[in-house]
Amino acid sequence: MLIEQIKLDRLQMPLKHPFETSFGRLMKRDFIVVSVQSEGFIGFGESTAFPLPFYNEESTETVLYILKELLIPQVLKMEKLKHPGDLDPIFQSVKGHRMAKAALEGAVWDLYCKKSGISLAKALGGTKGEIDVGVSIGIEPTIEELLDRVGSCIDHGYKKIKVKIKPGFDVKPMEAIRDRFGMDVPLMADANSAYTLQDIDHLKQLDPLNLMMIEQPLAYDDIIDHATLQGELSTPICLDESIHSVEDARKAVEIGATKIINIKVGRVGGLTEAKKIHDYCQSMGIPVWCGGMLESGIGRAHNIAISSLGNFTIPGDTSPSDRYWKQDITDAEVQFYKPGVLKVPEGPGIGYGINEQAFNHYVVHTESFQKMKVIN
Ligand code: OSB
Ligand code: MG
Image (cartoon, rainbow, N blue to C red; front, side, top):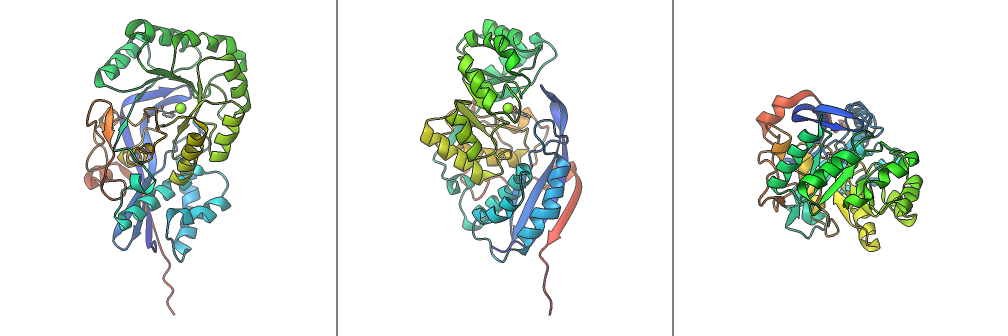
């Protein structure tokens, strides 16, 4: 396939409900959609970076910069691109900036699948026709409000309840959830790197609560201290921020820093790397699940496709669109087909089209890049 045009749209979508984590409060999503065009087909990818580098080092602006200055010019120069894996040499030349790479790679995967007439899930080696999903609940102003949210999510049938914690809002709210809803609710906590090894005794108070796991308790760039912490905790540790590649996954698993891995396609640089991490974890008996970054329908569709692989045995964070958006930008919104269950689309590519009207409503900036035509 010869990529003729690449378009970058910056969108701003207000969240229905502010989302608070240990690193800050988000009121809207400000992100980039990459569209790649070839012979009448268009593939779509979404950047998961936030406007400011509070989750990891990337931001909406760094994604734009890396795409415009480095990745897009090189892709438009390529003579042939048979498979998304052919992007690898270009990606290897740029260190880091995995969310920028993932947004472009995702669009190329969608295009490749649409041209081949196969679903993205099939192309990645997915085997499941439906996936179980959970929900991620942000930090609420009071424990009572948190309990209301947890109750409503249990009623909606979510298969896993994840709650954000931070110092000062951790043991008490988790205990309150257990007291109110019992020990059988599949419950976990996500700290987004808010603690240090000095907090070992404090975090040990979570052990009696029988949580499925605690996600990223320590620094966003740490692996080693997590192994020390896991030696002291009975609650399994799940790494999110610390894992950028299959090599990181290998190191973390080998030293006992993680028993479960949260795979986010953006954080690891795309679907190809996400699949490698999945395959490695499968071979090591480490279960994985698909994390979320408050994506629009485009990113959600990519998440559903990767979640169809066999070792995604724990429900992921891909909730239906209407939990986040008044109106999503895909033509069909992501919806439960049974409580807590999404169907994996069988149509070509990501299996969701674009709702142009909604899309255009949220766009704040657009830029297009064309293949240079050589005229003699
Ligand atoms: O750590 O998983 C995280 C949202 C923003 C930043 C980081 C995280 C999250 C979530 C939300 O947990 C998951 C979702 O998209 O619903
Ligand atoms: Mg997380």
